[in-house]
Amino acid sequence: MLGDMSNAIAEPGQDPAVLVRGLRKSYQGHQAVDGIDLDISRGEVLALLGPNGAGKTTTVEILAGQRGRDAGTVEVLGQDPASGGRGRAGRGWRSRIGIVAQSAGTVPELTVTELVRHIAGFYPRPRDPAEVIGLTGLTEKKDARIGLLSGGQARRLDVALAVVGRPELLFLDEPTTGFDPKARRQFWDLIRQLSEDGTTILLTTHYLDEAEALASRIAVIKAGRVVAQGAPAELGGRTQGSATVGWDGPGGRRAERTAAPTRLVLELTREFGGEIPGLTVTRPALEDVYLELIGDSER
Amino acid sequence: MTEITAEPAMRAAAAGGPQALPAAWRAAAARGGTELRVFFRDRSTVGFIVALPAILLVLLASIFGSQRAAGGSGVTIGQLYTAGLIAGGIAATSFQYLGISVAIERESGILRRLSATPMPHVAYFAGKVLQVLVCAIAETALLLAVGVAFYHVSLPSQPGRWLTFAWVFLLGTAACAVAGIAVSSLPKRSAGAAPLISLLLTVLEFISGVFVVPLTSVPKPLRDVAAVFPLTWLAQGMRSVFLPAAAVHLEPAGSWEHPLIALVLLAWIAGGLAVCARMFRWQPRS
Image (cartoon, rainbow over all chains, first blue to last red; front, side, top):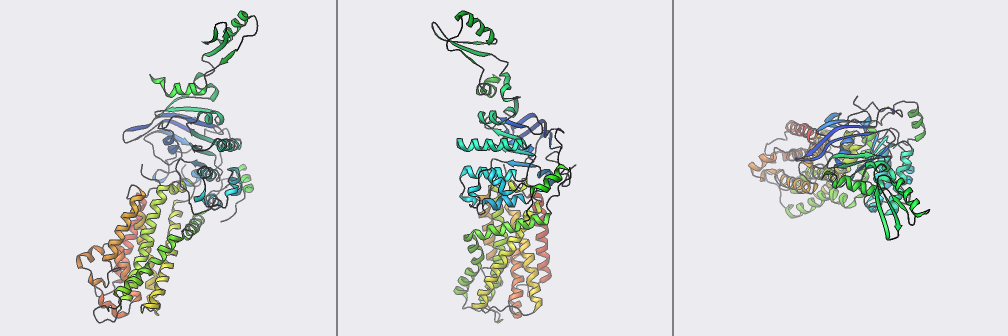
C-alpha cells in the first residue's frame, strides 16, 4: 500500500480523491479540528470556507501529509497521508499532490526558471517549466531573482511550484491573500483552467466571492467543525428559505419576507392591476447565509 | 537536469503504466548543484566562509609569529596555526554554516516545500554534503597557499600523509556536519540557532588547538572537555599531516593517536546520524 512504487494514475469515477471521517486535532488543549467529515470527488473544486482560526489550515496540513492527527480516518488518493515512515506518505503519493501552503519559503538567490526547473526535476511526469511560468503570469520575471519578486509574484511562484509536478490533487491554503483585484481574477482563471484539466482542488479561503466563483461545493467550517456544505447556490438552504419581496406602495417603499414569494407577487399584480412599481425579489446573499452560519447559528 | 517532455509521459499515463520516479542519485545531484549555485551567488557568505581562516592565520601569526614553539622542535607558530585553522575552517563550514543554514531553511519553509515534493529526503542531505565539501576544500586550499607562502608550511611529499589528510578531512567534515544538522533542530527558532552554534564553536576553537597553540598551553581540564568533541581530534589529525615529524613532541599525548582520531570521529558520525534520524524536523516547531 505504502510506498514509492504505487504511482498508478487513477481512473476517473474511481473512489473519492479525499475521504475524511471524524478528524480531530488539538494543540495544547485547544481543539483545532473537532470531528470533521469531508468527501471530495475526483475533479471537484471544494472550498473550505471559514473565519481565521476555524481549523482550515490544520485540516489541509493533515490531508497533505504535513501534520499528524489525533483521531479519525483520512484517505487521500487512496492512501493514509500518515502511513509512511515517520508518519509521512511515500514519494509516489507525494508526486500526485501539490500544495500551496500559507508559509513555504523559496530561495531568494535563484531565478524563477531555475527554481521551477529544479522542483520539476523531482516529479515523474512534470509539466513544462516554461509553460507553468507562463500559466502563472511570470514570463516577464522568468530570469529575475526570486528575492526581487513582489508579494503577489512570489505567491504566483508558489502556485507554479505546486502545479509543475502535474498533481492530481491540489491544496490551496488561502492562495490569494494579499492579491490586488486584478491578480485575483487572473488567479481564478488559472484555477478554472487547472480544474478543466481534471485537477481535483481543495481551496481554503475566507473570501466569499472566491468560494462562490471557483467552487463546485462549499464546506463552511467553524471552530473545527463543518457546519454546512453544499453547492454555492444552495448553501444553507438559500433556494429553499424565505425571499424578500420589495415594491413601491402608495405609502412608500414596502418589503415583505415570505416563504411564498410567487403568491405574494401574484397578489400584488392583482392589486396593482398589472405592473408592480419597483418590484424586487431577493434571496439571501451567500454572505448573509455565511454570517448566519458562522456567527449567530449557535445561540 | 534532463528535459522531460510531457507527451510521452501523458501517453504512458493514458496507458495506465506507472511513472518511474527520478532516481535518488539524480535528485541528490540536482540538490547538490542547486546548493552550490545558491552558495556561490551569496557572495558575502562565500567571502566570509572561504577567506576567514586565511585572514585569521595572517592575524594570529602576525601577533604571535615571532615566537617559536617550546620543546626545541623547530616548529613555528605559523605552522601550528595553519594546521589548527584548517580544522577550525572545516568546523566553521560544516558545523556552523551548515547548522545555521538548515535552521534558516526550516524557519523560512524551504524544508517544508522540499519535503512536500517527491524528492527523496536523503537527497537534501546529500546536496548539503556536496556543498560543504566543495566549500571546505576551497577554504583549506586558500589557507594552505597562505601558509606555504608566508609561514614555513611545506606540503607533505609522502603519499601516506596525503592519505591521512584525506581520511581526517572526510571524517572530520562528516562528524561536524551531522553535529551541525543535529544542533540545528534544538533551538525553537532559527534566530536561536546562530548564537548557540557560534558560541559552541568559539569555545571549542579556544580549547581545541585552533586559536591557542600549541595545545599544551591549554590547561588540562579544558583539554579534557575538548576531547569529547570532534574539533580537537580533527586539529590533531591536521597537525600530523602538515607539521614536521618532530612536532609530535608538542602533543599532550606524545603521539598522533591516529586510531583514536578515527574512532572518535566515527563515533560522532554514528551518534549524529542517529540523532538526526530521530530529531530532524522539516517544519518549525509549532
